[in-house]
Amino acid sequence: MIYPKCQLWGENFSPSEIKDIPNIIIQDLNEPGEVSNLGRYKDLPTPYGACSLHTPEEIRSENKIEWMADFILKNKPCFENAGATDITFWIHWTGIQGNMELSVIQLKKIAKTKVPLCMTYMYEEIDE
Image: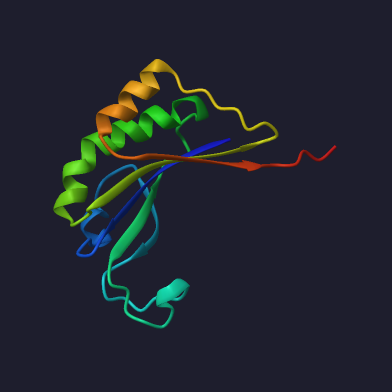
């Protein structure tokens, strides 16, 4: 399975300012100054805002990477206006084999976003 997402971060970034963007799932959000529940800022005010934007479930697996690239490209000005200074395109994938291939179309769309691309693979056992 492929799970593309966009991570946003910024010292003055407010995830609440992008909540009205349609067709997105926002997770792991924190506003600057919120007291954190975990990590190095546990029980302290967080000195930044951050969130993860996930591809909607109804998007077919083979279209998820292109969808997220198009979404980032379309909404990048909104992210920046909300204070995001670090925007990262992540591709997580799971399975029994770690190979991944990106099409020329996918590569072009990802490149157009002008944001870093990070990828991680998680091995997933198959129950027999």
